Image (cartoon, rainbow, N blue to C red; front, side, top):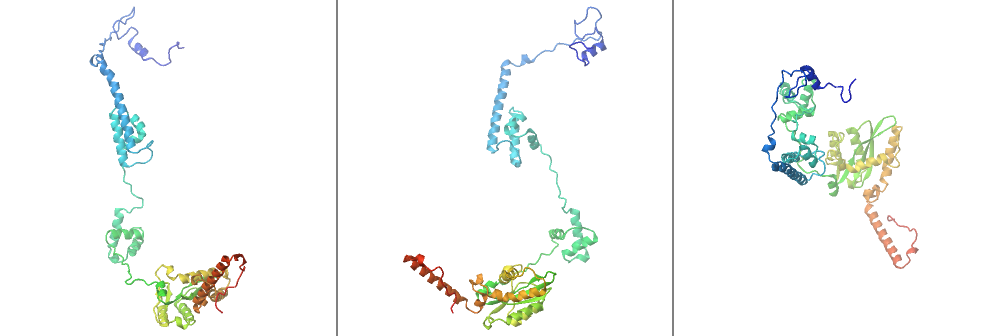
Length: 426
C-alpha cells in the first residue's frame, strides 16, 4: 500500500539511491550520522552569473520598448500596404502572381521588424499555411493531355505519307492506310493537321466568282419574269413517297402547274412539268423570261439545263449554295402547299395526294396574297392589280372625306353603320 503523497511511478532519485547506496551523496556536507561517505563523490563548482554584470538595467528596460515600437511600425506598414493593394477582408480565392509576391515581401519585412509570422498573417488576413505555400510553391509538373498526339506518333504518320504508293495521294488515303495497316489510329482531321504542320499538304484552292452574283430580286427589278420550280415530297400512311413539282411565275406569284413523280425526281419528270407549265403562260410574259431554281441534282442535270435553254432561249439562273432565301417565293409556297387550312392532315392513298395537288392551283390563285397587297395572283396575272389598288385608295379617300364632313357638321353619330364600298370596277 502506498503512502499518502507518493505516486505509483518510480522516482528517478530512488533508483539512483538504490544503485549507489543509501549513504552516497554528491554534494559536500550531506552525510548521515552513521555510515561512510560515497567513494565516488564529486564536488561541482558553483556557476557564476555573468549576465547581471555585463548588461545594464537601463539597456534591459529599453529592449522591450524598442520591440514594441518596431511591432507597431510593422503593423502600420502591413495595414497600409493592404489598403494600397485594395485587398479587403481575408485573402480567400485566387490571386495574380504579382500580388502574391508583394504579400510575401511585406510579411517577410514585418517579421524582420519584430513581428512573428503568425501575427503578420493575422493582420494581413491570410492563413499562415497559405502564406508558406505562396512563399515556397511546389514545382509545377508538366501535364500532357490524354489525347495529345505524341512525337513518335507524329513521326509514324509522317513516314506513312512518304511511302511510294501514297505520295501525291489525298490525305484520306493516308488516313485509311493507317487503319488498314495498323500502324496508327488517328482521325482524318488529326492526320491532316500533322501533315499540314510539316507543309506536306497542298493548300486548298477556293473557287472565287469572277463576276458579281446577280440575285433574283435584281432580275425582277430589271423587268424580267422568273419561272420558279422546286420539289417537295408527300408520304402516304403506307410509306409511299410522292414528289410534287410546283412551277410558278414571278412577280405575279401565279401557280402554273404542279407535276408529280413517285419515289424521286428525275430530270425527265422536271422537264415535263416545266413544259406543261410553259404552255399555260400568256404570250406577253415569254419575252423576258428566265428560269430560276436552287442547286438540286435534277435541276443541275445537263439534260434539264439544255431543255430549258432550248425552251426559253436563256440559261438557267441558280441561287447561291445553301441559301434558300434566293428562292424564297417557291419555298413559301411549299409551306402553304403542306399546311394550308384546307390541306388534309394525312393521305391514305396516292390518289388522295394527287387529288390535293389538283385542287391547290385553283385555291392558291384565287386567295388574296399579302405580297401582292392582298390582290389574288389571278388578278395580278390578268393585269387588274393596279386598277384594284387605285380603286381602294379612292374608296378610302371618299370615306375619309365623308367621315370628316359629318364630324365637322356635328352629325357624326348619324353615319350609317354599314355602307357599300366598291372594291373593283364593274
